[in-house]
Image 1 (cartoon, helix red, strand yellow):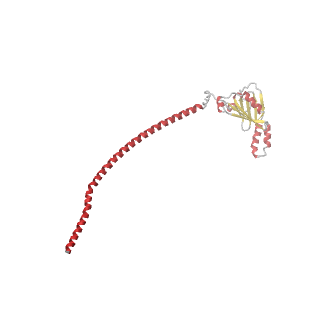
Image 2: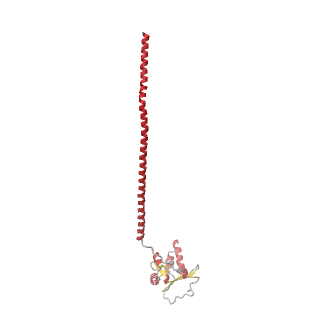
Image 3: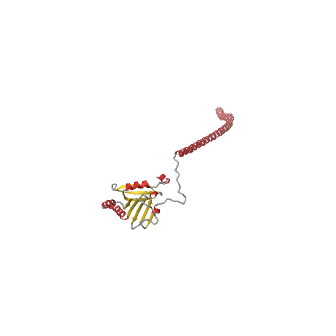
Length: 259
């Protein structure tokens, strides 16, 4: 009996254990179709979502391309307006500026005479063939002697020695002659002997600056071709400047424009 009771108890325990093992298996078998259905529905759903996302992305790209085209068109129109406006501004500014004067060209085969054309080298006598006719002499003589005196008085300084030598050289070898027809500068320097005779009609400008408390002055005359001739330490420089201005020639338009 004891053995049979133990055997019955053992069989009952096996039955309970088998029920516990079988129960989950049945539950799993019962749930398997549902899981397969879920998986099937899940496989379909992502495909639909992907198609919908593709459609949306295509629409977005199309709209973006249209927006880009519209932006490019607007940008091109804006650039066209700016370039047109800038061209108009440049044209307006150019119109406001004074027109550049047109320089008168020298006739073909002709040129303005310069200092070299009025210079005689090697002699201070009247050039052969020169015929000035009757002349009224305004001044004839050497540079002002006061320049030599002033420079010698200042020669005790080393800086003034070159100026003193120049003043002495001009006093010894230079002389001027101013008439109603010409301005002449003669030099008998050992280095170069020459004579310059400039007609008053070839002079277009004269500038004189006083020296030595106004007792003499330096003068510069300008020719029609722009070259200049200096007359240093000229006595009575104010009267001579006035005389030259009253009798000098008319400047060319080019000279007036350059000034």
